[in-house]
Each structure stands twice: as structure tokens, then as C-alpha cells.
Amino acid sequence: MDIFTAFGLSVSAGLNAYIPLLVVSLVAKYTDFITLRSPWDTLTSWWVIGVLIVLSLIEFFADKVPAVNHINDVLQTFVRPAAGAIVFAASASVAEVHPVLAMVAGILIAGTVHTAKSVAVRPAVTATTAGAGNVPVSILEDIISTVLSIFAILIPVLIAAIIILVTAFIIWWLWRRANRQKLVQ
Image (cartoon, rainbow, N blue to C red):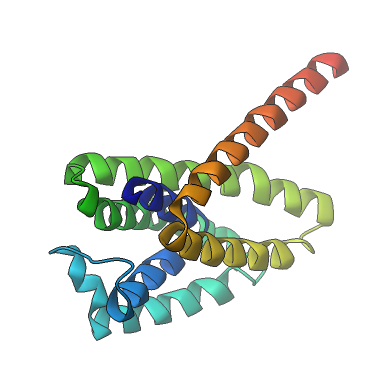
């Protein structure tokens, strides 16, 4: 089950870098749902939790301001995959996954989600709504990231089902889009 938790947290990190880190930190500090091994137990330090709260607030507000949100997405291109690597490795360490493999998996998962968000979803929202849809979409991303992080820890099997459904939807959407473009040409 820990591997499903790791996947879910990495997907969440692709949407928002700091929410899954903060959720893991707080859950590990105050509950027995996650026990972080060294060196990942550093996430339960008050200093780390405080920094994550500040960074979460900065990202929350930066993502709601027009033009700043695009700069934020560029900066997050490096941060979100790194956050995905950290949460994957921290939560998968219980499952005895090699740390390098765990970090690579986290980078790939969070990086893929971030790329889909910043290259496909956000530009489409900006283009179709003249930017008016960016704030609601950003709030929805934050909510999804938070709920997904909590569910990944509490109900990891649900994460497996969600990942399968989302992957199937993306494949269907891309297939449909490609077929529509063929019809137009």
C-alpha cells in the first residue's frame, strides 16, 4: 500500500509542490499513519513545517495573480518534480524501494503532471476564458492536491483506482483530440 501512497503524493506534487510535503509532515508528526525513516523524518521538524507553510502561502497567492502565475509555473518546473521525488522517497521508504528508484519515480510522476498542467491545461484555460478561468482552476488544483494527498495517506487503494481512471481519461482525450484534428485536415 505504501507504493500507492507514494504515487498519489507524487501526482499531488505535480499540481502543487508544497501541499503534499506539508500534509506528509503534519500527518507524520501528529499521527501513526506515516512513520518517516531517516533522513525523511526531518520533514517533521518545526522549522521544515514552518518553511512549508510559508512556501505554500507564497505559491497559493502567486498562482492566483495574472502573469505571475505563468512565472510561477516556470519556476515550479524544477520545484514540483523535486517535491515529487521527496514525497515518493519518503513515503515509499517503508516499502523498501531503493531511494534512487523512488526519487526517479517521483520526479517522473510529478514532472509529468506538472508538464500536462502547465503546457496543456493552463494555456487552454487561459485561451478559452481570456484568463478569467485561471483563478478558479488554480483553486481547484489546490483542493485536488490537498484531497489527493490526504486520500493517498488514508486510502491508498483509492489512489490506484483514481490513477487508472485519470490515465484512461487522458488517453481517451488525446485520442479524441488527434482524431478531431485529422477530420479538420
